[in-house]
Image (cartoon, helix red, strand yellow):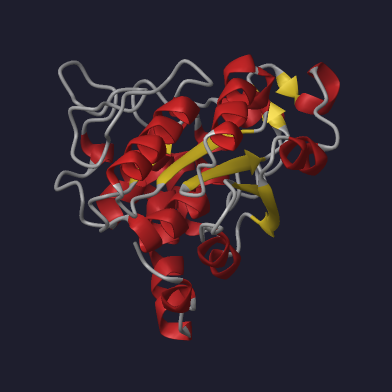
Length: 268
């Protein structure tokens, strides 16, 4: 596990991460242009979080990164590819019959320890990993990334209770707070208020960050000596593509290739 001192990225390192994030966004758009499309909105909101997490823990064999919001598998595949963990470009066969690049994370692929998809389940996978590492005396981290709509699942809070009860200081829970879910905006469906206070009530150290600032992301995924950590990352659904930024209806899309090329050319 890397130490806090190693988490201070130079300008060159941050620039390299930004380039990875931009390339990953291009791949996500390409997957949205596949015959089946993809969950583009949440994939574009979470990709910076994945890039930052892999910059810190991607080469640590004792740690795992679990994407609990498994419908954003396109982002996970893109992050693994730009980091050299996957050899094959996921956009070449995403969603095709017989392809391992399925619509939810496929544990048969390198770098994916657990298949996820049913919301809420990836959180206990990461917490269970953290508990196992603690019992072994290993410094490994269990890091989970969920959506904010996912917090409507009771399993998320049951896991938070266990993490506190077991003093899992090696458990990091990142929430991709993009304000949207499958059927619209969270605020219109089941508002989640006082999120910081909720996690603090469960015994977490809470950090609130800009979920598109790679510098803030890398600095936030540092374990606390005593408590599990919750990182509340403010993000924008569809981040980088002006036509869909912040729009709940961009949850899933299948787009024509010409539109994909325009979106990639206009990435910001």
